[in-house]
Amino acid sequence: MDVFEKCRSFASDPAIAESMGYPANPQKAKELGLYPFFIPMDQAEGTEVVIDGRRLIMLGSNNYLGLTMHPDVREAAHAALREFGTSCTGSRFLNGTLALHHELEARLAAFLGKEDAIVFSTGYQTNLGVFSALIGRNDIVVCDKENHASIVDGCRLSLGRMKRYRHNDMEDLERVLASCDESAGTLVATDGVFSMSGELAPLPEITEICASQGARLLVDDAHGIGVVGEGRGTAHLQGVAERADLLLGTFSKSLASIGGYVAGDRDTISWIRHLARSLIFSASLPAPNVAAALAALDIIEQEPDRVDCVNAIADRMRTGLRDMGFNTGSSVTPIIPVFIGDSLKALQVWRYLYDHGLYTNVAIPPAVPVGQSLLRTSVMATHTDEHLDLALRTFAEMGRAFDLIP
Image (tube, rainbow, N blue to C red; front, side, top):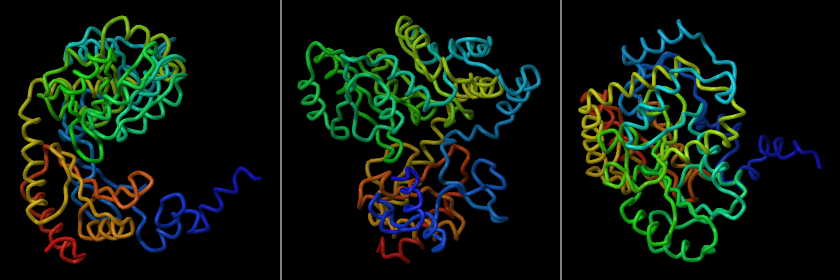
């Protein structure tokens, strides 16, 4: 069997793509004008993008606070580029640690109320490193079924076992934890803000269950940092930051850069620092990215109204969509899903919005369960009333055109 045969089949046979959960193979989707991925942008200015000479309102970015174009963030990156160059040319473990890395780690630990923090080159690598370093042969990770793929992959790379509980189902979490071997070390892992639905994890309940079962808790707040809890994330919003053992997040959303971090007690962070393979065997975060994240953190601390602003804009967008009759699930954050159901219709709806000036993201199987395809929209603190007015009008027109709303 040629190891590449599946690649050729996926490219040429629609039935193969359908068996994998895709409504069409990539080439067929392109021929139909329904391919929504890897779209090259000529310009990206935060709330608007230019593609093939057309200007669209960006409703598909994780730039929640709109800081990627902030002059202070850009100048900080430029200054670091001039001083340190484009790369550290080595891993943090050897020659790739700058004083800037330590400064960012200390700032993050203080901001999140933890003893220490360690910075990775991406959020994905953070989860790979943390789980593979912490979870040994006799350990168990208990995961929410809607956790981000990087958590799942980190668990797969570890030597321990992974068990899953139904999304935000506390009875099921208790059941799964009760089924774990009492001699095993147990870590519960959950997103703080779920990246597709915009829902919050019920952390007060989870911390109580963890305490009663002797389990530790990790909260991946990639989409919560800078967005809720005065910018400090979901655990702070819900008043349980001290009880969440590890707080993990990324810089590629609200912090206007790239990279990731985990914060916790000093001994645990030291263990991760010395045993996380994705840290030790990967090049370190370049200075311009570190400086950009530091500048973004400055703005979050000095301008807390940005957090209020993005949530007020999200409330207006979500209320407008719900009042029209769209199903936006249980979102309470700037991530606002619009559930469509059928995957082909979801692609058609995405294309309609794209052609009418709105850039959204579409999620189809296997990214979501069959029958639960959706548009993932998200707003920024820098969206204007005019942006929202046009977006809501366009959604209304789309909904009527596809019989999704009255």
